[in-house]
Structures are given as C-alpha cells and as structure tokens.
Image (tube, rainbow, N blue to C red; front, side):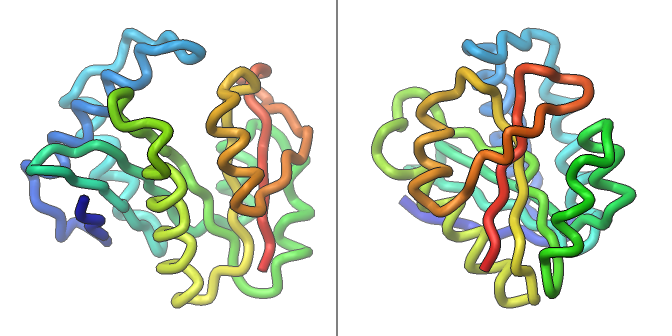
Length: 177
C-alpha cells in the first residue's frame, strides 16, 4: 500500500477521480445511506476543498486502486460555525494555541476495512499538519459509525457530545496536542 499526499490542486486528476468514485460507493452504505452523490460533483467538491487554507488530501493506493482517503483543511471560527450550523465549537479556537484543522472526510473501501488503513491515513494527515503548526484536529461522524468512532478514540480524539446543527445524528470529535 502506498500513501499519497496531495496539497492544493497539484493532484493527479485520475487519482482524484478514483477517490471521488470510492467516495460515492462508501456513502451509499449504512449508516449514511446517501445515494445522491455523483462522481463529477464529488470531484469538483474535492478540488474546491483543496483550495482552502492548508488543505490536504491523503490517499491510500493499492495496485493502482484507491482504497482509502481522508481530507481536510485549516479552519477559523466563522468556517466552523458554517460547517456545524452552530457556535458551540468556538471553544476549540480558544484552547488551540496555534491552529485548528478540520478533517472533513474519511473513507476506506469495504474490502479493505479492519486492516488499520483508516488509522494510518488519519495519522498521516495529523503528522503532516503538525508540520504546519496545527495543534487541534476536529471532525464529525455519525453516531452509528461505531468502527470509525472506536478508531478515533484509539487515536486520541474525544467525542465532544456536540451534535451537528443540521445533521442531528452526527457528533463532533476533537484532539489537542
């Protein structure tokens, strides 16, 4: 398995397309059950997300196939309020001494789960963002995404028990260094 880091819009378009395809597959599964994602729209979204401050995409590739991904970007209070549809996470910016990084997405192909890939790529994005001064990471996940929640807990994240203002079945998690 190879782990590839993409920053900005310097990524291989084929790799981004494969990532978008996997994204669409994963989000059709429970607990998400989101059948509305289209590969072209997800590809455009990834490219837009990669324009944000300190944006980064980490992709796990095995034999030319994308088997996992995570991406995120540095955020400020205003963007966090827009993402979470509330101001309940403002305290993160007071507790972080440097910068807050939002891990927007994480996905692993169902045939490759339970092999530590999600943990490896999450550790990779944390390691890479530490280099640019990030000392707080935040994300949200579904309350029924038990494997992801267990993985985040093992990595040092804590469930803040703060529900998203729009998606009430998702809570925010954070980790400070």
